[in-house]
Length: 307
Image (cartoon, rainbow, N blue to C red; front, side, top):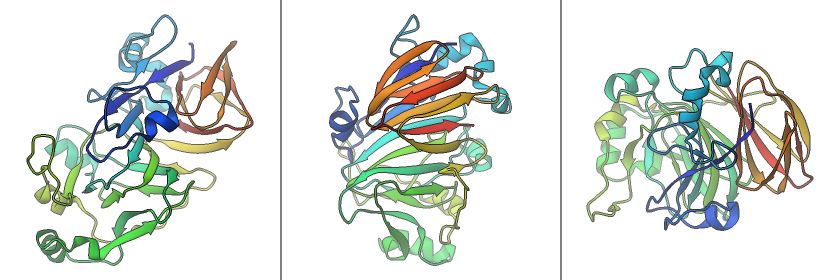
């Protein structure tokens, strides 16, 4: 099976900027350019193959043709492709939001919930994000603060620096704030409940929809729990994420595909007798069982994701 270089699906949400285009080489006519879905089989924004005989096809169609075996034995338990990876440029504040658990989302939205993690690619001096609460509160206080616009007074405002990692289980209130560029690795879901959106209006001139009732149902009203993933950046049932600097080698075994996202520099990736040039912003999919691969480039920084 060949390595696949992917073209992202892009989103023009109102809080986006232009750094994905200028800094990461994302090609899009959208302005603003808020998100690039660099590894996606989600129908709301599928990635497409950009080189070789399958150029122009979606990754989802390619997997459907080749069979789920190319995802690996650890993916047999999943009904759908398990992961969605994005580059996100928050020129402005994102809404304060929460994602539901699988159980709640399947019952109410007919798709899976979302656990995710953020890797900070860059940020302006003094940038911060909201990550859970700074102390436990009651459901009644949560609802009252939503109504009287004082919710941010009890949120955990976490300063961010390049290279920081935040793991966000479903039910954790969160918001990326202005001046931050991140790589997000998440469950393959697009269910988001907005709690507070700074009074903004959408492209139609109307206030953007909030989901207060759902947020009251699913939000954990406590500070975020400490996480320890050992040598990994983040790990859960759906993904294991590592970061590598410079040149390195590994193997794509039969258990899982490997996703490579280049977040700094340029170089090459070699696997199965094929060598592919890569640069900052490139996303590669290596099918399960592809064998040994080598990433080469002194300036490279690469995120490696597998199930």
